[in-house]
Length: 204
Length: 173
Image (cartoon, rainbow over all chains, first blue to last red):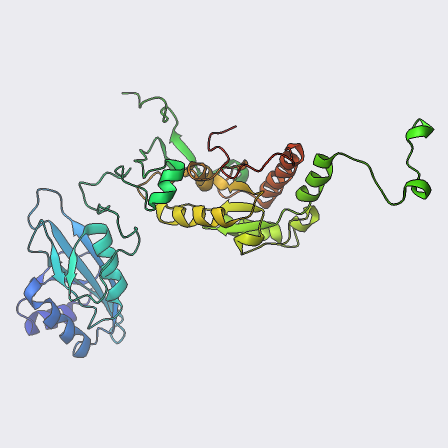
């Protein structure tokens, strides 16, 4: 970790709070200062690249429930910087968009919106990027089961022809892993627990 | 050719061969299956390999990969079908001219494979009538060749003269 840089940043931006980190320099930033900080990081601190924007759901009952995370990279220092920002509202989480400062944030913020339902205020084209537009849920929230929730199929006419819907797919037979040993022809991925299927329930 | 009376004599009868209609139509169909490569994931790499010179699917009359559904006979669904893509797969299938067949290549296309999640269609047979399933993750090109030869056998046993049922049953046969 670049201690010198961490101290420098802490001195210059008094609103930053140090954050536990095992790898790179990390700070918590209040939401109101995020845009100001990002502009300074880009123009004064040499954070040329915004590598990643992601989010964390701390749990249904946690407050603040959602945090967004930004990873910057400085080409001059050859090091990363992590900024975490808590969303104020737990029910309608939102965050200012940094896509005007870092165009790379555009698709990342769309993905975070798609998966967590965090609205990025000021984003030029905030719509789903992975799931289809009408999908009603946010799959990476803690209250969303991995198997999914039954919903309507994206295309109504295809659903009518085939009777198909978006079904929950419980992890029966799984997890699916490839055994590391043995001949390659015998080591294709297969289910570890084959004791339950769609027809017979999981043994208790 | 045992009895002289039914022997074929080209001097008398000209260039005519007598056969059954099913036999000749199916003979044509099964040796000119033009695939529509619906490559959605890593299975598509094996599909390309099957089309290449080492495995050479053209030995069976299938080398003409058609990227236009209008010119294709057999859709090879190679890869993970997400719900978002399922609509597209179905529409492309609808645009293929009859008669048409579907091969589900690999675990994902057949059953959803290891992706038991909110985003993945659990088997393309939920939206398309699949003729041949290929196991493997991904299947070797030989497995695909075997599937295509099985498909040829299947075409050979179909009735070529029945009106084509555009909506083949989605129930497994």
